[in-house]
Length: 167
Ligand code: FES
Image (cartoon, rainbow, N blue to C red; front, side, top):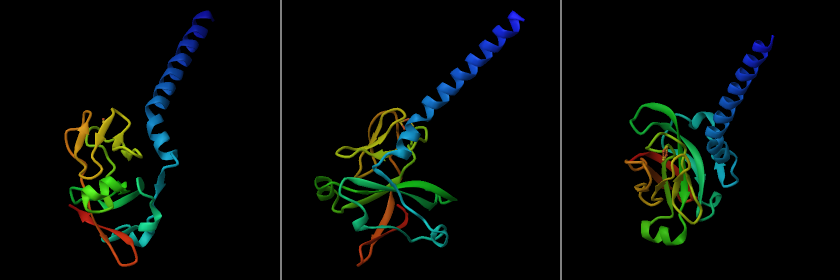
């Protein structure tokens, strides 16, 4: 009787430890998904598989902010919904880039966590503190070795921003 209780206790403790570890591992993703600065771009059914694809209007983003959206293609050209970010650069970066808007894959090139723009800073991966340049997508710090794949954008006369394809 005592042995069974001890076994159950140990089993319960082990399960609780696993649950806590899983929660800790998922915390950065949950934090990212519930963060106020993340606006998830809506992609309606008909637009899902077509490029160019409207992402947003210029007025939908303040400088130094981002919108998350799904590209209907992966960077390797295969079909798939690829998490991506549209960034409106803060003014000093926009001058350097020669454009206000940039878009990149949101999948970190290290181990695949979701990256986001840190306001006033760079593109950040919370998993292992990877930093990417919001103008070029190049790695600035941390373990990633490859830049974020960039998306070619087109902006029409109404200020609507379209993803054209991967650069
Ligand atoms: S997964 Fe992004 S830094 Fe490791």
